[in-house]
Amino acid sequence: MKSTVLAMAVAGLIGGIAGACLMSHLASGGPMLQSAVAASARSGDVVSASRIELRDSGGKLRAELAMSPDGGPALFFFDTAGRNRLVLGLYSPAEGEAPSVVLNDAQQRAAGIFRLFGSRDTPVVVLKSQGRDRSVYGLNPGSTEPFLANYSGDGTKSDVFGHY
Image 1 (spheres, one colour):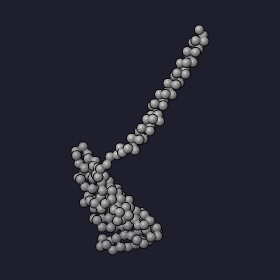
Image 2 (image 1 turned 135 degrees about the vertical axis):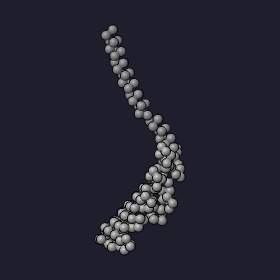
Image 3 (image 1 turned 90 degrees about the vertical axis):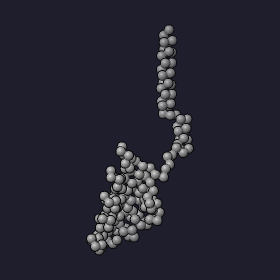
Image 4 (image 1 turned 180 degrees about the vertical axis):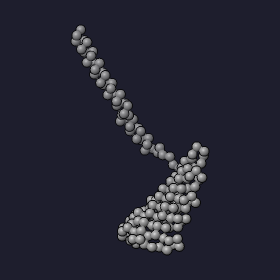
C-alpha cells in the first residue's frame, strides 16, 4: 500500500510538471502559432492611404499625415482655428528629401525651420519674421564649419561668424 501511495504521488508530480510545461508552451504561442502569426503579418496586413486625418471630438482636423504640395511626405499639425502650426517632414526630391521641422506663425508662415541641407546633410536653423529670414545658424555644407548670419529689417545680411 505504501508503494502505491508513493507511485501515485510521483505520477501526480510528473503529471503536474508536464501539464505546467504544456500550458507554458501553449501560452507563449508555441512554434506553430508563432509561425502562423508571422505568416499573417507578412501576407499584407497593412493600412494604405494617401492621407490620414486625426480629428478632435468636435470634428476639427488637428493632424494629417499626407504628401506635401511639393511632393515630400509630412505630418501636419493644426491649431483649433485650423491653422497649420507645425510640420515634420521631408523636402521634395528636388531638394534631396532633407528632413525638416517647421514651426509656423499664426499666419501660417514659417517662423522657425530646422533642417538638413546640402550634399553633406549639414544641420541649419532658420529664424524668420513675417516670412523673411532674420537669422540663419548652422554648419556650412561645403566646409562643415559653423556660421551665423543675421538679416536686418531691410534684408541686409551680416555674417556674425563663419560664412553662409
